Image (cartoon, rainbow, N blue to C red; front, side):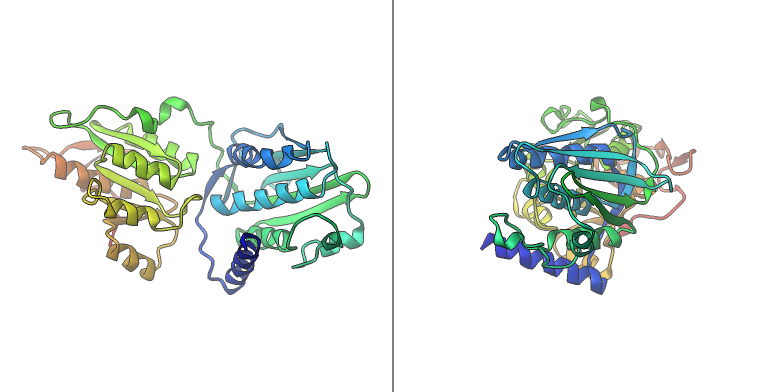
Amino acid sequence: MGHLLALINDVIDIARIESGELSLSIEPVPVAALIEETSQLMRPLAAERSITITRQGGESRLAARADRRRLSQILVNLISNAVKYNRRGGSITITSRVGSDGRAVIEVADTGAGLTEDELDRIFMPFERLGAEQTDIEGTGIGLPLARTLTEAMDGQLAAASTPGQGSVFHISLPRAPDMAPIPAAAITPVTAAPPEGPGTGIIDVLYIEDNPANVEVVARYVKTWPGVRIRSASSGQAGIESALRKAPSIVLLDLHLTDMPREDVLAELKAEPATAAVPIAILSADATPGTIRRLQTKGALAYLTKPLDLTELGHLLDSVTAAAHPPVGRVPVHADHATGGALAAGERGGHRMRDI
């Protein structure tokens, strides 16, 4: 039954892409970090056939413009395919680099039996399994077509090359984003080490639930410039809920596109728990359609910040939370504004204002 449901979901995804109805959250994605995360996820599957997965070279700062969750899905499909059609005791090598056209490139190479030119022409056709249905190799024939369709939906290309008897290489090319420095551990306060808070401490505690470490890094570095504001992060919906229940934050920044829970379940669970029901929650997403905004308003969201995130909008939001916790006495606080590079009074920043819902 699970196999059938996965097939149905994949077919629905392709239909949504072709009809223009699939929502994508395009943002800078650190390529090396995503490759490592996906490789760790797939290594137990590979180990069942004594296949090793390695990552070679690559630029640690390379970033692509993509939907992080969907790019991870593409890599999972390609690595899973490389495991199934590899030889026992073989290897899978994943590399990343800047292409000759300046785009971000990821390659997944295996040591399987390889493909002929005729087979290469057919592998991206839905339900085409090249005779594997007569073997014990599991599959639906929809993984590679979905991977290509998703890649093209993100303004990318997915191609394959192969040599019979030597293996195959799948080549992903995506628009390149500005390089990202590897994230220093000190830049983010871990979920388990939130700073002391409570009456008299003057601390505004921000909980950022986000599975893209690059986004967490940007927000964490911005928040560090605000006196009295601290940030902790959670990389999954469940971890975020647990963190909020251990210590209710002053505000939650919630990404809608998390890998472990459906879109709005985290918001619903936080609002259903007495300990966190009153905590303001701001949604961060590229999906800013009127219907989505109205639905989230009904479920209790305070604000909606669109991606790519405008730090000026985040500044307005922090102003409102700070003002509510510490009413101004005689003067307006001044903060450094990253979007304009100057020091502006709270409430007087330039740029787009936060989208209230």
